[in-house]
Structure formats: C-alpha cells, structure tokens
Image (cartoon, rainbow, N blue to C red; front, side, top):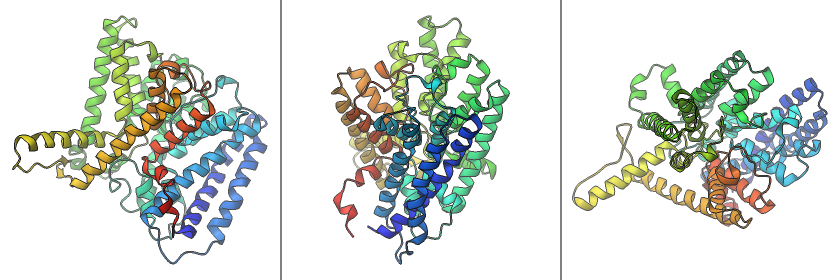
Length: 482
C-alpha cells in the first residue's frame, strides 16, 4: 500500500468536503435556522487533517497502483460519510449518530433511503445539505476532485477506474482531468436547465434546488413528506421524469452529441436497450394498472406509470403515488428495474444496462456453443467484439452483487421483517434506489430498523455505489501490506 499517496488523495477530498459545507452554511445564515455553528465545526474538522495530509505530506516517488486506487476511493467515501453525518447530530435534527450516518451514506451514495419521519419540520440547511450530498456523489467524489484540483500525481487513472460505474471505465474518463472537467461541465449545465424549469413550474427557489439535486444525482431526497406527489403538478412530474431519464444515460453520449459524433450514438447498444426497456416497462405497467382500474383515466395512469419506471430504473426513488399497493405484476416489473438500474457512466445505480446486456449475450453464446461446439461465437457490444475477460468480470460482479443482496436481506430479517421488506430493503440499498416494498415502501422510512440493520444497509449502499469491490478490498489484509 502506498500510504503517502493514499493520504494525499484523502486529504484533497477532505478539503473538497470542507469547501462543500460552505453552501449549507450559507443556507443556514439565510434562513437563520441556528445550524451555522454545526456546519462550521464540521468543515473545520475536515479541513484541518485534510490540509495536513494534502499539503504537508511529501510527494511519493512511486505512483498509485490499482489496489491503492481502490482503497483510496473506499476510504474517501467512508470518511466523507462519517463527517457528513455530524451536522444533523450537532443540531439535534437527527440525535442518534447511527441514524445520521445512515442518512449521510444514503445521501452521498444517491440512495435516498431515509430514517427521518417528520422531514418538513427539519431545518432548511439540514434539508439542503442532505440533498446537496446527492449532487456531490452523483458524478463521483474523486471525479470532482480531479476536475477542480491539480492532477499532478502519477497513477490517478486507478482512482477513476475504482470509482467509475459500469464494466469498463474507458468510456467515462479516458484522459483523466480533461475528461473529468467535461463531465462536470455537462453535469452542471443539465442541472442548471432542470433548476430553471422546476422554478418556472411554480416551485420555490429552495424546493427547486432540493429536487434539482435529488434528480440530477438520481438520489431522491425531498423536503416534502409526499415527495414529488405533494405538488400535484403534471408539469413538474413530466419535467422530473424526463430529467431522471437523461441523468440515467451514459454521459459519454452527451459528449458525443456535443461533438457531433452521431454515428457513435447510433451504435450505442446500451442506449438502445435502455430506451426500449423504459418504453416497454412503462407500457406494460400502464396496461396492468388500467385493467385494475387503479386511476381515473389512461393519461393519469400512464403519467404515474412512466414516472415510477423512470424513478426506479434511474434509481432516483421519487414517488408520485404509493406503488406499494399496485398489482403484483407491476411491482415485479419495478423490482426487476431496480436490479437492472441505469446506464454505465451515469449518475444512476443498479447492475447497469451494459452488464445486463453482456450477461444475456454471454448466456446465449454458451447455448450456441453447446449446440455447435466447433463454432466461434463472439459477444459484440456497440458493433465491436467484447473480450472474454470483460464477460468474466461481469459474471463475477453479478455473483458478488446477488450475494451481497442476500447477505443484507439475511441481516435485516433478524429484525422480524417479512421477506418482501427484507429483500427489497437490501436490493434498494445496493442498487442505490431508496424506497422498496412492504415496510420500506415510498410512504415509509427505515426508522424502525435496528442499528445493526442500518449499518449493514449503509455498507450495502457504499458497496453498490462503488461497484462492490473497493469496499470488500478494505477487509482484505493483503491490501494494507507494503
């Protein structure tokens, strides 16, 4: 382990976290809600060791190796979550530290699961901070650090590889700092457009900011107990639906569109499958709800259907209605969307569309190989042959993904919850969705879970956001040996 390099990276991220706290500090001063001291103290606790590590440690002679990158990414997310939980505890909005840590992890990982039962009575600055963590975590903490801080270290591509989402990181950040800056330029631009459109739809500036952060980061925290449904506005629901889908698309697609590389977009297998799955799922659920006479007319039914499809497939977790009472067919479709998730290289979570495509194509290739043993069958993605190592890596990831879901469900079941609640809470955590089914439906919270279950689910959230292996490597002794 290159301890010096890892400490320097961690120090930079801690400084970045301290700088991020100035925005909720400003919100506290504007609303005079008495939380300014809590944000100042937390910022100081982050800045002091962060500055010492980033500025005083001598630059190492050797660059960062893959295991250093994975360990550094996991430590950065863990430290930000540990410190990010302090403001709510110091203000008393969430008196229990374990509860506040669960909330902070849920925010940074863009999960959106909450333990807060009376959200509308919380301080405005605390609500701002919990939603702003969605925006910070949406594109990635280390990607943000590379975009705004000097990238003068060797081997920083291993940080990008460890934090990037999807089976391959080459689409997301092939040229490190320049790519990180381009990603954030697109991210900020889409965020600004969404904010303007929500504000134009009648939301207050504060509400528009909260829901912009939640949508852009595909997190789902709201300052309303009834989530987006509280506004009873078709315009707001349609705008958020569209942008949840936009932020679920690989950001390389937006960059290709800006540089007029339309041929690259046309060949994008993942984008085609994503759009197809969205349309088919929304249509099937709308037909199922119509046959069950769940809503007044087909227009209202389709609106709720496509909103929830976009919400759970993008792993945002916003709700306009209680889908917990929908017919079993519709709930099953939503559960499958929670597993599959969004596109690689987006702010969404889940298994990722690209991995699902590779899994299916690999399975069909095995069938063809059994029927025709001497044939040569290749898995193709975007018209190019995918290496066998990529398919094997996806298989390993899927196995770890499912094992972690069952492990989380097993721990949660100790609280006495039924299978639907236990399984969906673990699935929701590792897919970074937020709401699930049963006792963790869109109108309920995780407040009744035991501290053990909350810590377990918080670990699942971090593991899901970091693609599992960085968190698991923290518990591997060989990683910490020189």
